[in-house]
Structures are given as C-alpha cells and as structure tokens.
Image 1 (cartoon, rainbow, N blue to C red):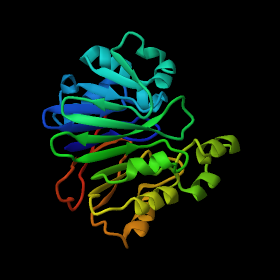
Image 2: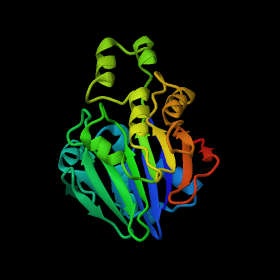
Image 3: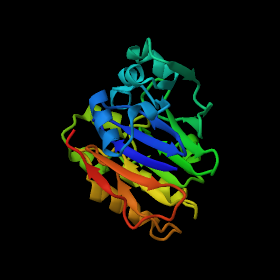
Image 4: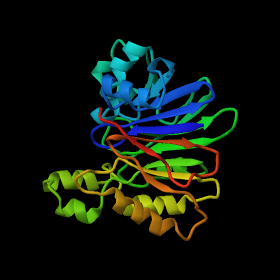
Length: 271
C-alpha cells in the first residue's frame, strides 16, 4: 500500500491510498482544480480513483467531493448525517453508510468508527490492503480521545492523526473565547499533547509511519507538534519518522509495510 496526504489543514484535507491497482480517497476538501493538480504531480489520473470516503460534512473535508464525483465518476461514500449536511452531493453517486460500517472496494477494505467532533455523524477510518493486510488509519477532527479513537489507532502500519493546536498558543492566539472553547472542547480538535500521548499509548512494533495532520496555522507550528510527539515516543519501540502534513504540500508517498524511510519527502506545489 502507498499513501499520500494531498494536503491537511483548515484550508482542505484529502488522503490518497493505493493498493495494487485500486485507489481510494479519504476526504476531498479541495476544489477540483487543486485536486487535479496535486494528483497530476504524483502521476495519478483522477479517473483512476474508484471512490471517495467522506469523514464529515465540514467544507475543508467535502468541498470538492460532489464536483469531482460528477466530473470523474467517483462513487462517494458518507454517513447519512454527512449526506444530510452536504446538499451539493444531491445528484452524485452517493452511497450512505452508518458509523461503524465496513466498506469494500476493489483492493481495500475500510472500517469506519464514529468520532467525537461537532459534525452530524463524523467518522475516522482504518484502510486495509486486502491481499497484504497492511493497515493505515486516517483520524482527524477529534475533540477528545474516545474508546473509538483508541481503536482506530491500534495495530496499524501508518497512523495519520490530528495534532491541531498547542494549548498555550491557542489561549494567546487571535481567536475570541467562544472559538477557543469550541476548538478545545470535547467535540473540537485534538491538542498536540493529547495526540502525542495517544500515539505513545497506541505504539506497537507494527507502526512504521506517524503523520501529524490538521495542524492549525494560527495556534501551532510543525516543529512544535513534531517535537511534542517525539518526546513521547522516544522511549517506545518506535524507530520511524514523525512527519507533519502541511496544508500546501503533498506529503508522501508512504510505502506502508516497507521499512520506514529516513525521511518522507514533501512536495510543495503552487496550486
């Protein structure tokens, strides 16, 4: 399995997963022009993607889903709550599911788990390559570490996990108190220290790649998020890199199931 983060942050989120000849996207939070450009930069034709799984209805996760589905023939899979909150999906090839359902694609299986966020019916996903058993988790937009979130992070080869904000930077930042309370709340976004502790507690020898995602541009810094996690995992069995997924970059590819590389390349794109 190979995985690319096409971008991650409040401006848009999308993750491409490939196993054998099959490709799926988790979230499509960019417009079709940006999606096409970032896919072209890694040599992937948009028409080769068989489906897009949407985690929830917020614009930074669903912005391009409907237009891309119509333009390139993607099937869109989303919870009923997400579909109800995304009127643009009317007329697209939409397949509803309930949080907790399992989805089957040509070469990959996707397990969905409900997550704590201020959306109608949000989910995180574990994607498994059917022939090899390689597993990758995508789990962002989580207000706290629930039992479901812990289950998402266990026994995987690649973990893409939200590390949204530094609590001190959030308190000192530009947001009014009501927005700060929403971000820091139980259905908001995960702070660096909570993400780091979750990664530490989820550690097994199987984990080869950690990617910190959905970093706030106002209340976080890539180096700070990375250092917070590295402090927690340095005494564990983990020997891979901790990579930050940037909002304006394609991060990857991560060759899931292969030995962890010395560093994951990041391709900055002017799109």
